[in-house]
Image (cartoon, rainbow, N blue to C red; front, side):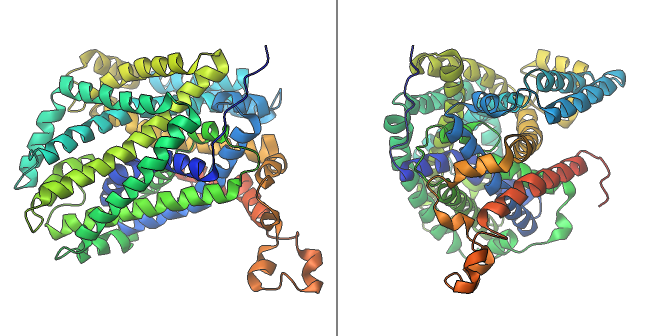
Length: 534
């Protein structure tokens, strides 16, 4: 039977908005502001932007190229491009195997299990294991991400029905605590929200994801602009903008730098299989470079706008910016209620409606990563594949629904984790939700990015990846940047050096082969306690 022709995005704009929709989500509007507040403000923002442009852009180019070259899901793409036997995969496999045996001997049974399974997968299927790792990260993130989406729907309803009129943060915090301590209601919203995202996928790529992205992304931007304008025009808003934009490196730790790195991958949907999956539906004549730059630009602009929409309002109303994950649910409702003019309910409603759109497009992208895997690897038709992912990951998400306020609602899970990972494990992570968020963002995504850079730089090779990137990009990516930027591109004596030296392509190759894996590894080792000299 001949393989079914793979669907393509209808336009470059559709692809950019769709992949931007996957990137622009809760990571920008919910997570970025609160982790910025917890890590000192402007210094964290600078490190985050550094990670975005020095590491995020090159790896995004890799993932789109991998997807388009193979026309497959993340696992199938790595499997199709890797060599039959890879010395690097075997080397990493042996190193992980030795680490797993050491952990097993020292009593770290849980981490030993994870390490040994990863080692065996690398030794057995090579770098295709990176594709499975990315898919697992996407599904784990989806399971708790949609829970937050459910929280937001609750707050949209409460905003427009007058249920968020809190005088202080304490009252808002108690109301939020009472809500998340009602796991049945949280579960209802979680499953409903994931169902909305699943509906976006039924029409496929063009009639489903692309069509909805063209509607939802402009709506999100307009709502964000409206909230930002109202926020920065409040009396005392300048202190919030100063906190957000002025760097103070004394407040930034090595762990904070790893959080910035993890969030760069989180917010760009890297190492989750999403970008590879979306790239697999991209036509050969589309320019990957311009598409990736537009996505990163849109994502970064929205993240900065979200910070400028939130922190000026928080400071203007005299609240604490370092409120953690509850910033938008505990602090912002009280903040909006104190807006002058008596229209705080409207601004709160618009804010949470904007947040709903951001979460919905990202949830749909996470779902599509799993759906495409089932379609490509098991030939499951689209509708049953959507239902399978919805039921399985929706069920896993119930653990996050029932444990947001602590482990008491899932005591069996707590006992198991304490026995396998040690008693301190469930003390450090107060619930299943926090555990998944920390493990995926700070461990799985940076490591996935590390192995993706190694794979493209040394296994598939930048030469082969570069051929894919050149399709639709034109000659500019191979023009000497120094000659081009200095204005001598048309000078006859410089024609011989037009394609020599530092070009966009050679710069990308240097970043992928050397800078990205080294920086990711150093930050990761430093954050987990390995001495690396600074």
